[in-house]
Length: 483
Image 1: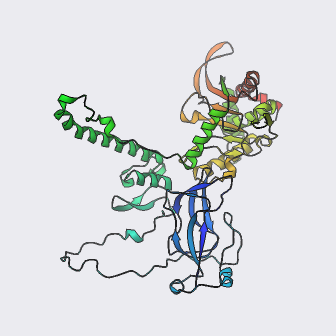
Image 2: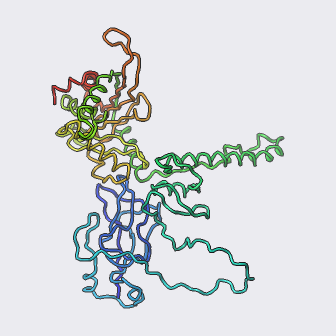
């Protein structure tokens, strides 16, 4: 006897009201254990695996991959107590006491010890109608059986090379990200025809985007070729509105702003509409900073721990500058018309991932040295790359460091990460002619840009902050005063 229980999309915290289904981890007929992850969803903050608080047989799933569900909407139903085929065929229901003995833990996001053993996943397959579809059809020569796609799992195998079907063909696909596979499906891109630009031929999102653009170019060319006879026949009525231009015949692509990208768009729009920002910038000679970094890493030796990155040094410089200019480590309470100066520095840093731009936060950066900050940046960057950052790791920042120099650009005017008050942008460090000790020399030069909320401070404070940062870049010994 089984009791069918409905599991709804839980409240994922941080004020999130909806989530997009990235991939299902179970199928109808699978046996799941209590607190076993059943679906991977993408919220506006992070990618989350959602565990089910019930143990039993999955009887239904709600929502396809790529669809959005609001918090509280049904995710799936589980037949509690139905662990074999006989239990699922029973038409009688269990008593409340039976349901409690095999019910869920009540736990949603974090699993904890329960009395239920970890159940093996088994498929409970319903009986199928084996009658022939059309007995009157003439006999045909036997052909090799096609792969049973309808019964194959829709979720990717948890290995570097997934197996899937595109355009009726099956085979290995060198792609890991479910988002990349979904993007390819949406645009009917055959992943087996792509050459990956990632490590060991791994197909990245950039490869799929390139294939989408190429497919759009081919489609536009075909549309232009097909339109030529029409234009020739109607050459006497060129001004007629019935003749469409090649550009008009192409279909524009519409990309929904949802999930992480939608949240970023909303935050950037809010920042521009609410914050009266201003930007100042300065070029700095980073030659001594690079030399100091090389000396630090050389002193640590081959087994002396992780190397200190340039970003970690810049982050440590920022915390020292914020100690001198706390106005920039603040936020605006518009309702109370007050500037709120924050006691600690939670340093965000911009990181580009396949899911888009994210800003992980190094907690209590003002209490850390460069090595500690660097280790935390490396840890958070790896979580961002794999899509495993929690919402808490993406919120609560008080100041943001944006190293856009990794994209090969010199300068930018950063948009403040609302509701913070400032962001420091760092361009690429590259050899340039520079006047050094009164003589022209080739030095390692970087452009630093500070965008700040003009409500929290005037230009003198912002300029003082930026100048201190530049001084530390040019003469790292300046930092010794505050270490």
